[in-house]
Image (cartoon, rainbow over all chains, first blue to last red; front, side, top):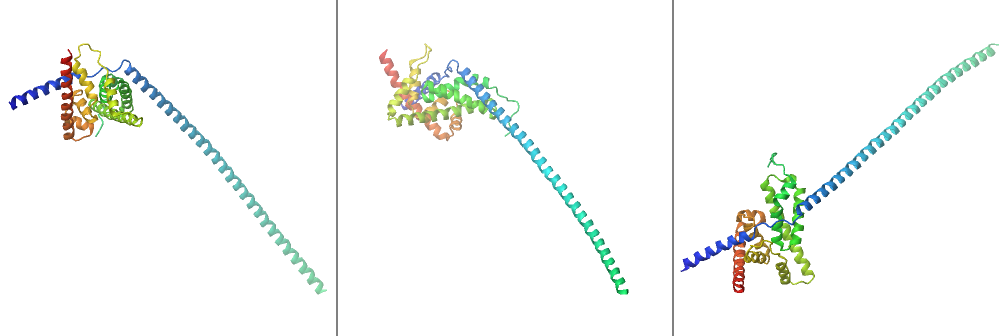
Length: 126
Length: 181
C-alpha cells in the first residue's frame, strides 16, 4: 500500500515537474526590446566616445599649454641667464678698468713721489 | 586564467540569443512585466559594458542568469520596501503581483500552466529563484547553487519545499478548475 502510494506520489511529482517545465518555457521578449537595447547601447557608446574625445581634447590642450608654458619659462630663464652673464662681464670689465686705473694712479703716485724726492735733494745740496 | 582569443562576442548576437531568457527570468522573479522589461534592458546593457570580460558563450549565459536573478531580487526588495514605507500590506502586494502576471497569448495553453506561473509569483523569493532556474533554465541543483551563490543543500531544500508548496496549491487549483468545468 505504502509502496503503491509512494509510486503514485513519484509519478505525480514527475508529471507535475513535466507540467512545470512546459509552463516555464521562455517567454518571447517584448516586441522591439532588442532594438531599444541596441539603441541605448549605441547612445552609451556615443556618450562614452564623446567623453573620451573631450578627455583627449583636454589632455591635448593641457599638453600644449605645458609645452608653451615650459618654452616661455625656458626663454625667461635663458634671458635672465644671459642678462646675468652680461652683468658679470660688465662687472669684470669695470673691475679690470678699476685695476688699470689703480695701477696707473699707483705709477703716477710713484713718479710724483720720486719727483718730489729729487727736488728735495737738490734743494738740500744747494 | 587566460582569456581565449578566439571568442569575440558580438553584442547584437548575444542580445538576440538571450533576450527571451533574461526577460522570462526577470518576469518570473518579479511577476511584473514592465519591471521585467526594464530589468532585462538594464542587464543586457550591463552585459555590453562587461563584454570584454566574457570568456565564452557559456560564461556569458551564466553571467546573464546570475545578474538577472540578483537584479530582480534587488528590484523586488526595493519595491517591497517602497510598499512598506507607503503602508501597503504585503498580502495586497502579493495579490497585485498575481494580477500582474499576464496570461500568455497562446490559445492552447493549459489553465494549469497559466495558474502555475501565477502561483510561482507568490512563493518566497529564494524558492522562486531556485524553481525558475531548475525548470525554466533546466539547471542542476549544483549549477543553481553556483548561480545563487548558495550551498547545494540549501538549494535542494528550497527546490523540495517550493515544489511541494507549488504542487499543493496547483492541485487545489486543478480541483477548482475541474469543479468549475
